[in-house]
Amino acid sequence: MKRRFIFSMLLVLSVLLLSSTGYSQKQVSDFGALKIRAVGDNVGLLFLFEGEGPHVVAFGSETPDITVIDPRGPGLGKIIDDKVHNAADGPVVTIINTGPHRAGSNAEFPDVTTIIAHENTKAAMAKLEAFKGANAKFLPNKTFTDTLSMTVETVGAGEGTNRIDLHHFGPGHTNGDTVVVFPSLNTVYMSDLFPGRAVPPIDTANGGSALKFHDTLSKAIATLRAEYGFLGEDAGLAVADASKPGLKIVMPGREPAPPGPYVPMWLFPSVLDEYASFINELVIAVKDAFEKGKSVDEAVDGLTLPDQYKNHDMEHARTFVEAAYSELKR
Image (cartoon, rainbow, N blue to C red; front, side):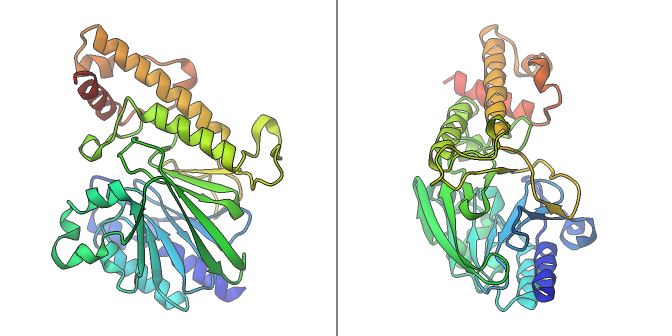
C-alpha cells in the first residue's frame, strides 16, 4: 500500500498541464503549483493533473503498463517519463492523444511502444514541427475511425484487466476529438468535446466546427447513454439495464476539479445535456447576429444567452464566433 501511494503521488507530480497556445519554462519546472487529483472510488488507478490549461490523465497502478493520456507539449515528456520510471517497475509504454494540441512531448518517451489517436488527429500531428524528421516515429502507430477498445493489466488497487474505450463522434474542437471511457471506473473523460461549462475553442485549421459542435456532442451523449448508461439521473444511482456499467463521473477537458486531494465524485452525466443546450443557444445567437449583418465584434459584444448560462466562461467566444461566421459564409 505504501509503495502504491508513493508511486501514485510521483506519477501525478510527473505531468503538467499547459494551455493549447504555449507554455513557459516556469510551467515546466514549477511542480509545486500543480493540483493533484486521484479520481473515482478506486483510488490508485486514475489520476487527473491540473494546472494552467487542459487536463492530463494517467491510468495505472503498480504496473509497468502505464498509460498517459495527453502528455502535452515539448519539454515535459522526459520529466514525466523519468518520474514514472523511478517510481514504478517500468516507464510509460502507452500514450493516447485525444487531439493534436495534446501530443507535443510524445517523442520524449523512449520506451513507448503504442501511441493511439484518431486518424484525423494523426494527420494533424504529422504537420507539427515536433514530429518532423526522425521524430515522425512518435506519431501514432495505432489509429481508429469510430471506436477502439484496449485493455490494461493492473496490480495493487483495482487489480485485474481494465478496459479503456475510445470514441470519435465527429467534428468539434477539431475533426479528431476523442472521448475516453473507463467502464470499470464508471468514468468518462470528455477532453475537448466538453472543456467544462465554457465556450469551446474551435480549431478550424484542424477541421473543428462551431456549427457542427452541437450535433457531435448530442451524438456523443446519446451513444454514451445507450452503451454504458448514466448513473445519477433523476437523483438515482442505478441504470435501467443492470448489464451496463453506468457512468457517474464526467471529467471535463479544462474545468477545475473540486478541491481536495481526491475526487470521489465530480460532475454527473446530466451536465452533458445542459452543455448541449448551452451550445445550441450559443449557435442560435451567433446565427441571428450573422443574419442581421452584424460584424464579428458586434456579435461577440452582443451575445445574450439565457440567465442559466450566466456563469459560463466566455473566454473563447470570439474564436467560436469567428469559426461560425467562416462556416456560414461558405
